[in-house]
Image (tube, rainbow, N blue to C red; front, side):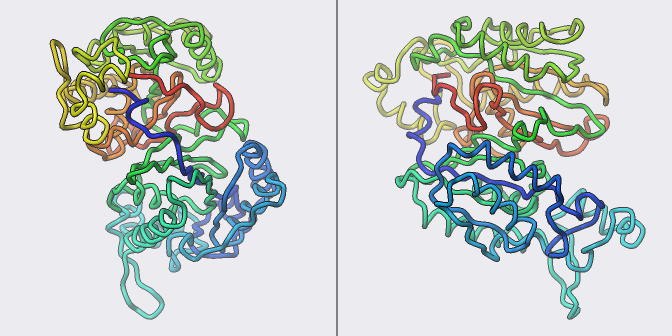
Length: 451
C-alpha cells in the first residue's frame, strides 16, 4: 500500500473552522441557532491567532454561518488574507436547531428534560423535539440533510481540478455533519468527533470524488497541545518518522527499514510536542522505525515510561511489492496496482507474505482494543505504528470500512488523539487526527512516501 499511489496530487482543500469562544460557551449555555451569543474577547483573540496561522494559505473563497459568532470569526481570520476574499454568509451553515433549549444551562436541561438530555449525549440522531407550532422534528437528522446539501454545492462549485482552498467557518454541530457528509457516513455517527473553538480541520478533495481527512481539530495555533481529555482513558496514536524508503516512495511493508535523519528529527519534534503530556504506558510495532520513534518521544518525558512491543501492529505485508517503486509495480502488476489505488479492499498482495487490508484491519484493531482494555481511566498511552495500521484503526474508530483507508492521511510523526468514556466503554471520540504542527505549520507538509 502506498500513500503516494493512493492519492492524486492535492487539488481542492476545504478548511473547516469552528467559531471562537462565545459568550454562551463561557456561561455554559446551549446555543443552537440563538444569535444572542457573541464572540467573547478570548474568542476574538483565538480568531486572530488562527488567521495568523493561515496567512500564507491563499484562499479561493470563504463561507460562514450567518450567526454573529461565526461571521465575526470569519471576518477576523480573513483580515490576514489582505482583503482579497470576503466570507459569503449562508443558511446552509446554520447550527443545529435546538430552539426549545436555547439559552439553557446544561444542569437546567438535565433537570427539566433528563431523558432528552441523555439521548442528546448518547444517541443524538434519535432525539426528537417539538417546534413552537407543535410539530415534531429530529434536529440532528435535519442538520445532516442540510450538511449534505451544502457539501454537494461545494463540490460542484469547487471541483478538485481547480486547485482551490476554501474556508468554511461555522459551528460544532454543522461541522460534524459536514464531516459525515464528506465521508458518506450517517447521522448516527454525530458524536464520534470533537471540534474545539477556533480549531482547524482540513479535508482534501481529489479527482474522482475521493475525500481525505488531512487533519482534524488542530488547536496548536491557540497555544494548546491537545484538547482537554475526558474522564476515561486516552490514547495517542502516532505514525513513525520518515525513512529513506518513505522519501524514495518505495513500498516498505514488513522490511525493517530504520528512520533516516529527517525521521529522527520528526520523532524528536513529536517528543517535544508531547513533552507536557504525561504518558503512562507506551506500545510500538515490533519493527525498528516505530520503536525508534517511540523511544525518541519517551526520552523527553519527565520519568521512565514502560514500552511494550506489539507484533499485531506491524505494517501490512506487501509480498512481492516490498522494496519496489511505484513505476516498477505498475510495470509488473498494472491491473492490481490500479485496483489497489481505487478499491484497496479487493486486493491481496502478490507473493509470499502478501496481506489484504481486511487482514491488517483485523489484527490491528484487535491489538489496539487490547491496549485500551488494559488502561485505567487516568492513564494516557502512546501507540506508535505504521501508515496502513494507523489508517485501519482510525477508519474503525470513525465508522468507516476497509474500502475507505485512503480517506485518512497519516503524516510521518503525526499524532492522533482518541478519548474513551470511563472504563473504556461507549463509543470512542476522535479528539484530534493527524496533528503535524510540530513539523512546521498547521497543514501537513510531510512527504507522501510509501507504506
